[in-house]
Image (tube, rainbow, N blue to C red; front, side, top):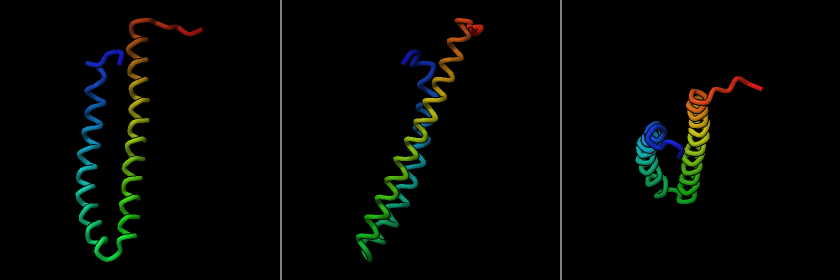
Length: 87
């Protein structure tokens, strides 16, 4: 990373928040999964797969947004040092 000390904290805070929320969701999901598994194992597996798919999609969405934010911040920092007045 170009300036780790400048950009890493905001990225880490977003991922820490995501991990914390996901951990809470996972505990809730595990309880539902265990109850469902006793009655219908295939439905429980489907439920687990759906949960995993949703968590992965949310992680990808967060990462896409972070990339956009990072490039915006980096561009702003570069432009403040190297003035570009257009073509």
